Length: 116
Image (cartoon, rainbow, N blue to C red; front, top):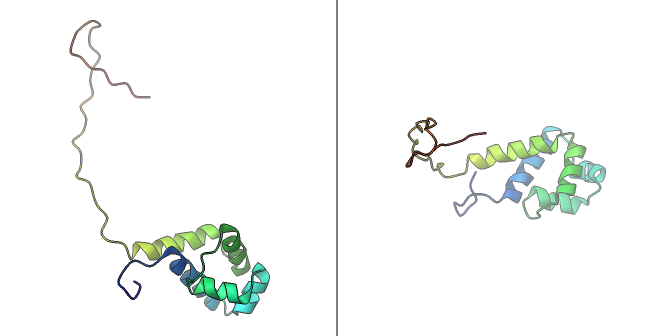
């Protein structure tokens, strides 16, 4: 979902939306989650509304309170953001490189590519 002005949403907006979705799916109140995460209800509300950009420590505490992995939260945020991005720029395929065979030492003009 794009913001009102048609631009891509801010990361904090999507993070808040995903956190709120999890909280509501669990039928929990802001007060319950905030208490367990050791943050104020006001702050958590602002995070959910995308008005505050929480630190990684706050996100981890809220995720723990919601019993979700931080990596799962970030994966959901990524999926949400991917739906808002412009088409990905795709580069044209590059022709395969022909391997260079070793030449006799001292022969000028030969190039040898070495790969590890």
